[in-house]
Image 1 (cartoon, rainbow over the protein chains, first blue to last red):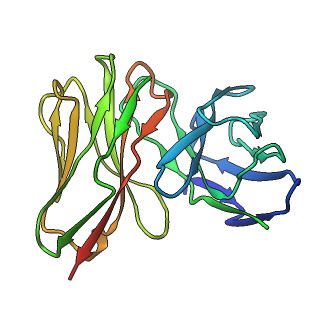
Image 2: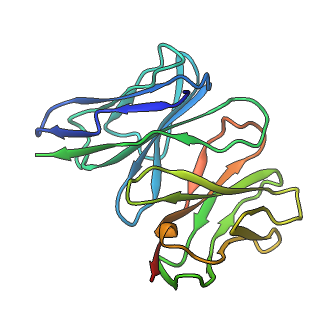
Length: 114
Length: 116
């Protein structure tokens, strides 16, 4: 079955530590996205990539970095520069072609600073 | 920049009754798509219904329907015969139409409670 796999489901980070969240898809979708979800604030876009080896900043990119070395993978690194990283992180994909597509979402990663 | 506003942080409905969730958006584009997503306690995002802006006919998916008012930039979701499993956070979302790879912009969400 095609789908999106986010791992780990829960992640704990110490102050000053970088951590990487994984997002892998086998849907053959071109575009991939990272969103952050905080209570009462909906989903905010961190980074997105529409093709391999290219990505753009979203609305809240500070303190985050990404790479897109292959179509199937779009890992997100939360760096020590992100001052308030505790949140729920969602990865999503969509085909990059004209059409009436929504997103397919992963099941998310809950990141907590300890 | 496009914005999406959901003015009802919380709503409640009795089982088997009908409830309407509101959504307004701001855009200067003429070609765009609108979506409603459901996020149950599992936090998995599920697509409920979608609407193409150039279509005047309101989309319907079983018990879910929308009232799309393009001039008013309004996109409300009606849930008929509410069920306990409808309890979730609901997000309205907007996407520009020129490519499907363009970003989705979400509203803040409406938490729906279904009372037995």
